[in-house]
Image (cartoon, rainbow, N blue to C red; front, side, top):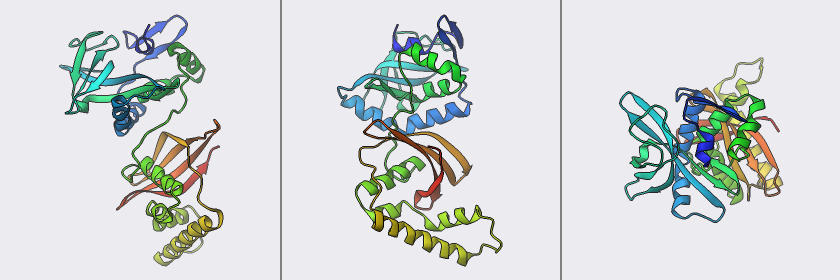
Length: 294
């Protein structure tokens, strides 16, 4: 049985002896919406890897949004490849449930806009596969090990590949970490907004005096100087050879998100932290830690 056949059955809910029930999650589910968005934001890594696969990359597959009149379904395609216009071609890897326009093992082509997920197996670890993770996250804790065993993979947080820029909260975190690696304090400060960080800090304090503009400006200057002095005194944080995963976003408001970051270290260890991010006029920036959870 192929990997995709292990992950998905022929029905929306399928009971299989010795394996967990496979439950189809609607695209309206918040976990699934974030999974599809995350797949789109990191698709560039899949495309680059597919064009130049490495020895440690053993499996490539893409999930495609297939429409059939009033029905639609997200179906995995094996043996994927892109043409010069960004269209995707592949072989239907699991039996459709609702749509009748495609069938198992059929070779089809789709627009790149209809890609809803991607996955690579790297050294036995699932990379991508965000909709699979969303399904797994919806299972009871006692069923997750059986789910992993049924598909022959141990599913951890993985390694994410957001672009290193200020277009996403995760990209902003990677940008400041890249600045630390390059020992570039100006680049690191470009990833910060000390005024907004001061507002966030002060709003969380029970202060007897009214918070006015002067207090915010003075606090922002203190935070800026503290940031610079800490690096000058202790050096840049070491993010070299660290792999990152961003399993969760928590929306505070339209411009403020708390991001969960997992850092994988060369020795096999990991840390998990929550980071405040803010959408400023120049893009997303990192305000500082929200809390420490490990």
